[in-house]
Amino acid sequence: MPAAILAIALGALTLGSWSPLAAISDLGKDRLMDFLVTFGAGDVWHGVVSICLTLSIVGGLFEMFAFYKYTYLKST
Image 1 (cartoon, rainbow, N blue to C red):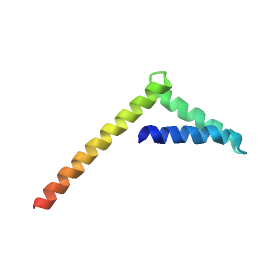
Image 2 (tube, rainbow, N blue to C red):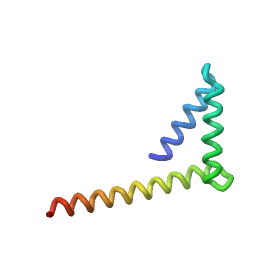
Image 3 (tube, helix red, strand yellow):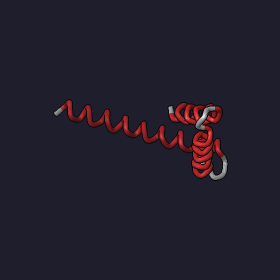
């Protein structure tokens, strides 16, 4: 899911470069690429992988916590 969201955002910003708001779209795309390069130690794809893995781990931990709390509260 995080990879799909990043791909949609990057695709929308790329397609937005053909719209009347091209300057804003280009600026947003540059900022997103800088963000990914920062988290990828200089490589965009490493940034995508690190963001996706981090969000997946956090989502899994949240699901485990919610499941634990649900079963604990249901039994009391």
